Length: 580
Image (cartoon, rainbow, N blue to C red; front, side, top):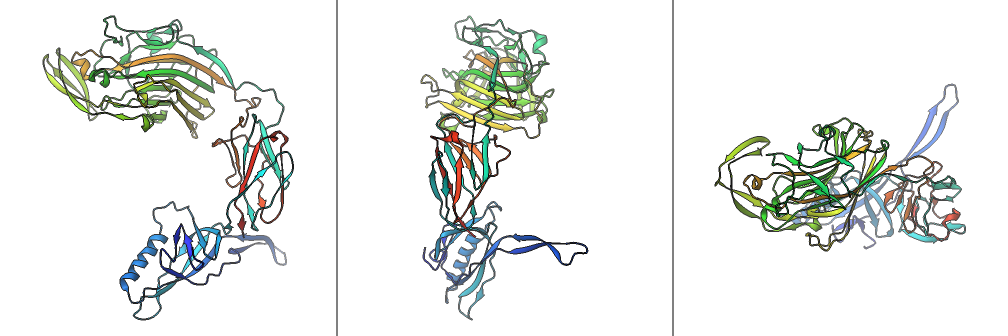
């Protein structure tokens, strides 16, 4: 950048826009507004201080095109393209630097792009003055940092002459329950050094390894209030194979499972309610389940198969208040299954969208997507049958006679949940919900790409609609949906569904549960500009009420002392010096 030009958003006024910049007189101070109050019977006003608002920089510009009108029009168009922003976020301001002061960055926006004035008749040379307004009137110098020794008093002396907001990054060597510092006699404190007796954060209430059916019931009266996001018919049979609960295999040697008798147009299969229930209803809880949902690929019937593996969380009335499911989709069969995690307001219904919140509904990361060739397959009906279908939201019935033919699509796609065998955890802490999905790498999976997968999803119920989603028990549902291949009389492998364990913990949210703010190796970032503290990128809420987020004074020594328990920790201070 030359001394006689400016840089706006990385675009140079001279080299890129062919502007000639005149003498720029930087303002000494922002706009000032005296604050006073009239006091009855007082001689004069009560002075309440001065308000400092934005600062304006006026930039005289000349555009030299001489007698070339086409060049003049092109230069004007270039200027408008750069200076007029209609699509950007209106709250964003942009950087401006001058060649004669390249180390200072001013952040702002143009508030005046006036009509150009021709300098002389018949020549396309023009002049005008741009006005650049800074909401933050300070100039920003290059970022600087220093390493802090937490065992002694340190002194930070930033460049510049204005206050600036430091960022401290702390990497402890052991779990931290509290930390903080005193800067310029002001306090920043995180966590608590109160020597309370630590209570466990989680208390195990239920653990079922699914090695027996003794804890489950299929009693119709108990299953009656249990709902899902779709109509289903509880039938068929499930059993334990010693390590998981599965759908009972048929004894015809085909490997197929007994989901029950085909129910035209609906979902059906074994539904098992945990009959023991919990020892108490949990208001704050963590539920972990180990689910396996795997589609077979031996033929196009198996690839098109539709099933849903579900864990349903129940309240004291046996009604569903939560749903964790891996489900094949009915539209465009043989596509990727989806993971769906939903909450249902206590006493609410899946049919009322205001009663339901979907925390996640995903096919998983695209890196697991395998898109194979789509084919159209001819099927022949082996018996007389009436098929129930949904067409444009309407239910219709079609009659087929033995020997009739039809065509179906085999998309043969697969994704993360086409062969998922992993752990899913859902937590409720007050109105905060956290979902964790974990699958370790399995070289035997039909999803042939590296398939380890970990995801954390967080949602806060700011409207408090789901505050009373209290867990008292749970149910398991292994559901199948009949497809045209069933109605035509074909036999095939339905997806393999199993549940190999459920644990339920009570979360202790009392004040006597002292939780570490960070573990060894985690990064704590204290950002005084945003007045926010994060631990490994996640917002930390354990901020002491006395914290003041103290600032640094530019050009002056700023003494700082850290808490003793940070000895051995790595601490880096970073700031961007500023000028008034």
